[in-house]
Image 1 (spheres, rainbow, N blue to C red):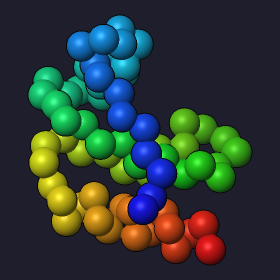
Image 2 (image 1 turned 180 degrees about the horizontal axis):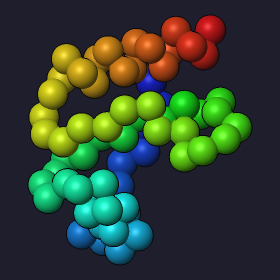
Image 3 (image 1 turned 135 degrees about the vertical axis):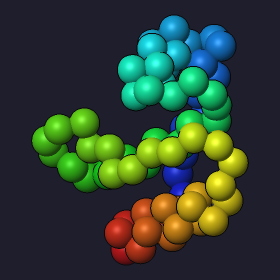
Image 4 (image 1 turned 90 degrees about the vertical axis):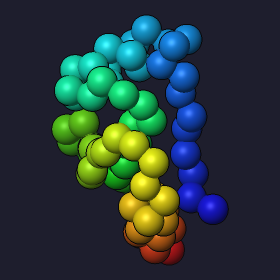
Length: 67
C-alpha cells in the first residue's frame, strides 16, 4: 500500500547511471526516500536484490510516517 515508482534501468539512462554511481551492478535496486525531507537527496536506505522483508519494513515505516 505504500507509494512507489518502478523504473526500468534498461530504458532510462539517468536511472542506470544513478544505480551504477551507487555502486550496484545488479538489479533490482530499491531506494527508499523520505518524501518530506527538504534538504539533501532524501535517501533513507537502499539495497540490491530480492528482499521482501526489507520491502515490508520500509513500506510499513513509510505508511506510519504518513499518518
